Image 1 (cartoon, rainbow, N blue to C red):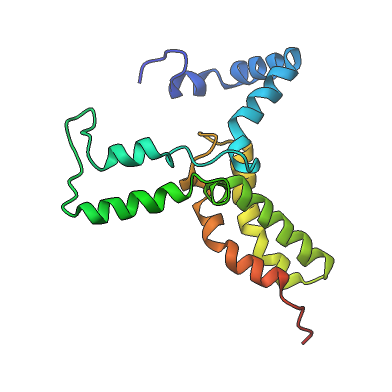
Image 2: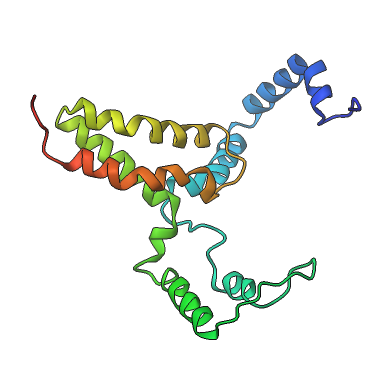
Amino acid sequence: EALVPGSRSFLRENFSACLKLYVSLGRKYPADYLKAWIDETKGYWNGGYRYWRWYDEEIAAYFGAPNELGLENTVFSASARQAYLSYASLFTTPVLQPLSSLGLYTWALLLGAYAAWLKRDKNALFTTVLPIMIVGTLLAATPVYAEFRYAYSVACVLPMVIAACLSPKKVC
C-alpha cells in the first residue's frame, strides 16, 4: 500500500501527527465538530429519520426497472407485486412511518431501561445493557447516519427488552 494521505499505511506511520491535527481542528472549530457529529448520528437517536431505503420509488424500482448493471428483479405474479407495494406504502403514512425509524427504537429502549431502573429490577435493566452499548458504539463512530443493518439487533430484541422492563418485578 502506497504511503499517500488517507491510506492506512500513512495513518499508521503518522498517527500522532494526524491525531494532533484532529484535536487541534476540534479545538478551533468545536461547533463544526458538534454539527458533524449530529449529522452523522441523527438517524439513531432522532425519531424523525426513516430508514433511507424505505421509499416508494425505490421499492417500485426494485420490482421492475433495471439497475445500472442492467439487472432487474422479475416478479411473475402481478398480484404479489401489488400486494407488496401496498404493504410497503403503508409505512410512508404518518401513523406507521415512525416504525421505519431507528430513533424510535432507541428511545423505546432508553424508556425501557428507565422503567427497569425505577422499579429497581436488575435483571430487566441488564437486558438493556447490550442494545444500549450497540447504540453507544454507533453514536461514537457510525459510518452512515441511519443504516438499519447496524442497529438491526436493537430492533429485534426490543420487544423482549420492553416486556422485561415493563413487567412487574418478581421477588425471589
